[in-house]
Amino acid sequence: MTTSVVVSSLDRARLRPLVAGQYPDAPVLRLRALLDQARAVAPHRMPPDVVTMNSRVLVRYAGDDAPEAFDLAYPDAGEGGLSVLSPLGAALLGAREGDLVECAGGRVPRRVTIERIAYQPERAGHFNR
Image 1 (tube, rainbow, N blue to C red):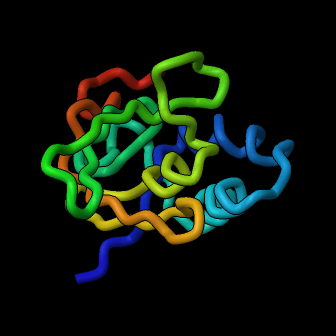
Image 2: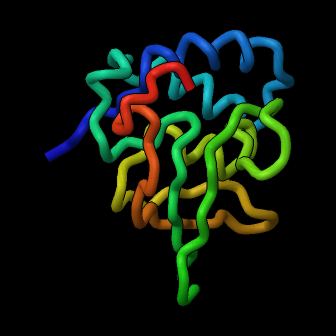
C-alpha cells in the first residue's frame, strides 16, 4: 500500500517563503518539490508517524549500534537543531517512522532509517510551534 506524502499546512505556509529566497541547492530543490507535491493537512489532522517541523526524530545510520536524535528546525532557530535546509533535514520532512531516507553525504549518498519520532508537536497538541 502506498501512502501519500503529507505535510502540515502550517509547515508549508512557513517554509514556502523561506525556500523561495534561498539559493537553489539540492536540499532547497528537494524541499520545494516536497512542498509542491505533498498533500497539506491541518495540524490537528497530522498523522502521528510523520516528521514535521520541530519534531524530535531518532534515526539510525546503517552499521551504527545506536540511533542518533535530531530536532528538525528552521534555519534561524539557533544551535541544537538540524536545519530543514540541510541535506538530512530536507530528507526527513514528511517522512514516516520506519522509512529509509537518502540524502547527500559527501561523495556517496547517506541512508538513514527513521526509527522513531520521539516528539511531534501536532501529536502533543502544540499546533503553533
